[in-house]
Image (cartoon, rainbow, N blue to C red; front, side, top):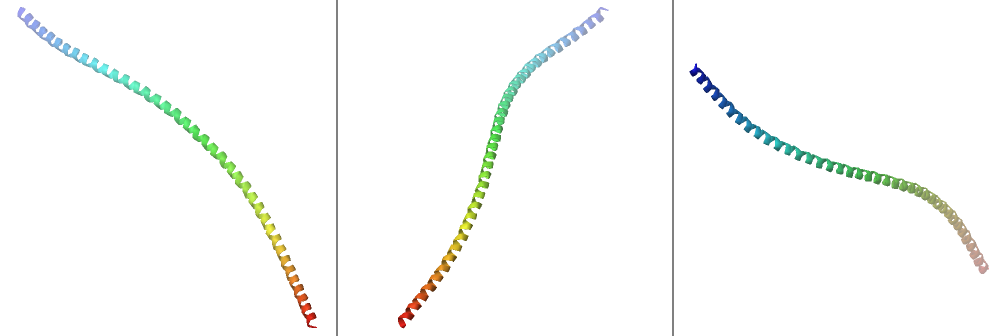
Length: 142
């Protein structure tokens, strides 16, 4: 029985040594895992900071773009108002131009009438002068 007990004890000691060796390996793996976990935690923290910075930049950019958009909308509104003014002036100028053209047309018509009348008078005066000259020549010939 003692031999069997010694043999069993040796088996238990060998098993204990194997378990202890495996325990050391597991402790080493645990240390490595803890190191990896610490590295991962550090990376997660760094990524969190980068994310916060990116969010701040995005918020600033969004605010800036909103301001630019408001400025652009204001510029469009101002240009639209100016366009309305220009169109109103254009319509007003068109009416003034039509009135001016109408007055010029009336003036041209009146001028043509006056010219025609002067032409008629000139023809009458020429005929009168010719008759006077003819009368003078006839008198001179007698």
